[in-house]
Amino acid sequence: MARATWVKTTQDGRRLEVVGLAILLGGRLEAFELIEVAKHPNRRAILDAVPDATHMAGRVPLNAGQAATVLQALEQAEAEVLASPAAIHERHRIAAMWRAREQGIE
Image (tube, rainbow, N blue to C red):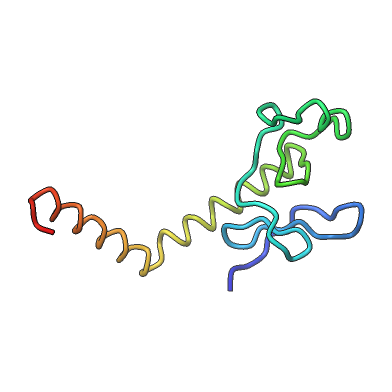
């Protein structure tokens, strides 16, 4: 099982963690990626409520340090997934399939 990286505890006591390629809030899936507050459609309301927020993980605002923790954990998990024998085999299988298609073999 993938290890959990703690990011923060919310005001209501739930833990925000990165487990594998997922961001979990209280043990339930919250997001797979971060959204910059500057690019978020509700940025004004977010900044009014949490002035130091730089990113959102689903419904959870994060400051710069917390966002860096999430991004680092996601990058490490992705590197581990890509290095797994199953992922390497799958990339080789897909490459062989595309090569065969290019040569007219299906």
